[in-house]
Length: 397
Image (tube, rainbow, N blue to C red):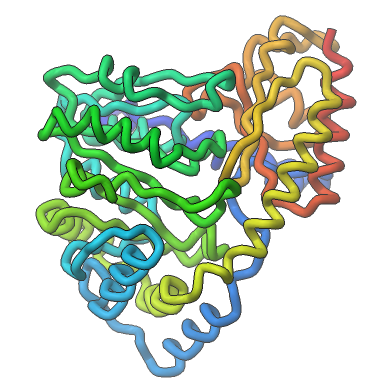
């Protein structure tokens, strides 16, 4: 083991994946566990997308494509960006990858040199920090709490900038909080970065269509910084295509070419059949996603209603995605049957063992006073999960 790469020591295992694995292990033992640890829609992929994939198989679309995705798919993505986001790209500014995570990794590896600083609002998606570390960059964390709906301010971003700042990365709607930045707030970010022409911005918009408060706004629309914005999206969330593994980015030609170069040495193009499915998906009218969005909103409201009955659990109202990120500091220092709760990680393992509900501790997202509750499950399951949580939390004294 001592001969393995030192970069492994810089990486941590994804806690969402770790909790899901622990949940599966318990289920394999015949234990009834409600697993709410993964960010995966519980809906089927829409039929037109499946039909397109079957047709691609029947027509033997089974050979290598361009590393960045076949031309007609990239052209379709440029149409999607124009239609939904008012972003203007050409096909050679699009890189299709094996999921949005790879798109983000490609961009970070294309931009960051050892010692470069990357501004990361907290809470953040689990993989941001480890991808930055993999590139030997230095994360600079900017904190936001539940009292501000987990939104950092333009002033905070400006204060975090140093001569070594090279990149800022954020998501909206956000995983894990469901926070959605408004157009005005994003324009405030852009005003800050307009004065720093060497700083890039990665805008992770994978939850774009799961937005409960109106039209999604892409920061890449702001003229003063548009050439430095890398807009990342994909099919996993809005189209319930997690297993298809298709993500994509739009960026300057220089960045897109760099991402293509990196991807060409790591995975090459993503699955040709999945690309055909994605081609159909991005050209579908976005209204096909509305019923799923509306179901998520209904679930959110139901879970928040039930969580209000749990003493000490502090919640806000997330505006998108399918997560609630409650503050659990009320339970820190309490115990039951010899189990002391020192942080949200302890509480998550307590709830897994006692309530048989699998959640993700806030430490995975930068703050161990919170936990992530995914409501991407049926309402009956969610009601039962909160009931179990309430009963088990009541035992802590």
